[in-house]
Length: 122
Image 1 (spheres, rainbow, N blue to C red):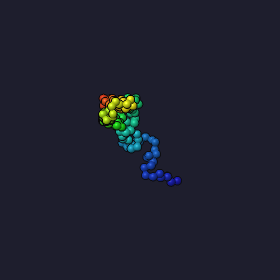
Image 2 (cartoon, rainbow, N blue to C red):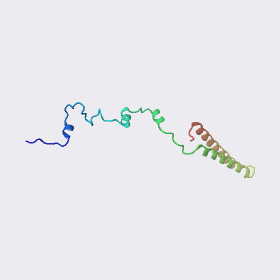
Image 3 (cartoon, rainbow, N blue to C red):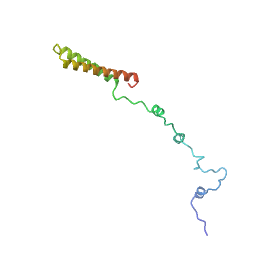
Image 4 (cartoon, helix red, strand yellow):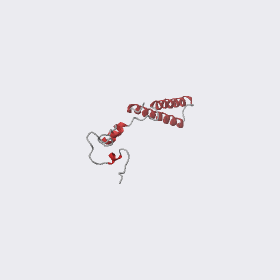
């Protein structure tokens, strides 16, 4: 009976027996080159929140701090214009509005200064 032929060198690939000296299997795990991506996956990484936060790039702030300072200056100018252009004595409503505008401007200025000191201004 005739011997079946598997194809060129297929018998060597399917053979699980000992290999000849100097003829290594190119697909064996010992000889396959390992890329840097596979090495980093095998090494793993720490999942501590501090290292995750340190690896993330700093996010750009939604609004620059100088916008807040500009709004503060405009609100103070608005209060000054209201006081100067209104008939004297000022009504309690206008006084309350000017005080609220100045207080809002102060809050915006504090927010801008705290963002600059915190390093969020890029």
